[in-house]
Amino acid sequence: MLNLVYAAKDGSIIDEPSYYTVATTAEFDFVPPENDYIDIPNTSKIFYIPDSIPLGYNKKRMHIENIKKGNSLSAFLPPGYLRLYLPAYKRKEGSKYLPFYAYCHIAAKGDKLVVPAIKIDDDSKWNPANYDFTPNFVNVVKPVLKKFENNKIVNQLSKCALEYGCTAAKNFFLGQYEAPIPTSNRCNCSCLGCISFSDRHLVVPHNRLTFTPTAKEIVEVALYHGDNEKDTLVSFGQGCEGDPIMVVDVICKAVKEIKAKNKNITINFNSNCSKPEKIKQLIDAGIDSIRVTLFSADNYLYNVYHKPADYSFEDVLKSLDIMSNSDVFLSLNLLVFPGITDRLEEIKALEKLLDNYRIDLIQWRNLNIDKYLLFDNIKLKKDEILGLKNLLKRLKRKYKHLQHGYFNRPKSQFYKELYKLSL
Image (cartoon, rainbow, N blue to C red; front, side, top):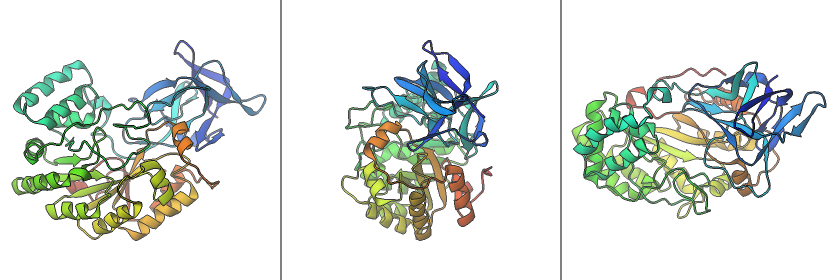
C-alpha cells in the first residue's frame, strides 16, 4: 500500500506513514491500487495546491480523514504520460480556482515518490531533459530572429520559446521535429480549459495571439524548417492562439505554395473542425493530417465544455465524415479527465464515434483544469467508471487498426507502431 505525502507549511514534502494515500477520480475519493503507480518521471514538476486540505486513510481507524497539517501535493507530468487519478483534497472555503495545469496524484512507496500514470508514447524527441530552458537559449533564437525580423510568426515563436518555455517553439529555432505555426487570434468556442483566453476572470498561462499572419510569412516559416529537418512536420493550431479554422483561407493559400516548393513537408492542422466546408478546402489544398480536439463524444458534455458559438457538435461530425473519406491522417486530440473519459456512457459515445468514422490515432492528452471548476460546470449522472487502463485495453481489443499515442507524427510514421503500450 502507498503512503500519504503532503506539503508542510514550509514547503517541504512530508511522508506520513500512519496514513495510506487517497486519490480521486471524478468526485470519488478512494485508496488506490499500487499497481497503477510508476516512479515519478524525472522531469515532472512537483508543487503544492494552495488552500487545500489533503485526504488520507487512517490505518488504525480505517477511514478517510482530513489532514490539516499542510497542503495537498500534485505532480505535473511531462509530455507522453497519461495520468490515471487526481489528487484527493478539500478546498478551503473562499479559495479561488487553480491555474490551468493537469493535476496528478502523488504518493510515497518506500523511499520513492510515485504517480498513477502510464507512458502513452515514445517521448525520446520531446523529453524536457533534452531542451535548454536557461537564459542561454536566447543565443539560439537571435540569429533566426535576425534572419526573419519582419516575420510576425517568428517573433511570436521567440516569445513562446523564451518566455513560455514551449518545446515546440524551441524546435523551430533548433531546426528539429515538429514546429508550430500560430495563425489565429480568434476562436468560435469558449472552452472551459482554454489556456490562452477566459471570459470567466480566470488566470490563463498564455496570452492569445494578437495578429493574423500573411501567407508569405507562413510559407517562410514552413520552408525554413523544411530545410533543416528530414522528417519535417509543421502544425497549425497551438495553445497560444485561437482556432486556425477561423483563418483557413490564408492557410490554404500557404499550404498550396509550401507543397509546390517542398512536397516532403508534413503539414498538420489542429482544430475543433467546426466548419465542414473549410475542412474540405484544406484537404483540397493538400493538408496531410488533421487532429480534432474533443473533450467528449457526447453532445451534452461537448457543448458544456467547448461552448460552441457558431457551430454545433453535428458540424464536427460532418467534418469527421469528410475527413474519414479522404486521404488525410485523422487523429482525435482527446482531452482526458479521470472519472469522465472512462465513464461507461462516455465510453459508449466514443465507441459510436469510432464505429462511424475512420480514426487513425487517438492522442491521449491530460486535460489542464481545476477539478472544482470542471464539476461546478458539468453535471454527471451516476455511472460506472471503468478506469483509464481498462478503457485503453477495451479499445485495443475492439479496434485493431486504431493507434494510441500523444504526439503528432510526420507522414513517414503515420501507420507505424511507434510505442508498444504496457497495460
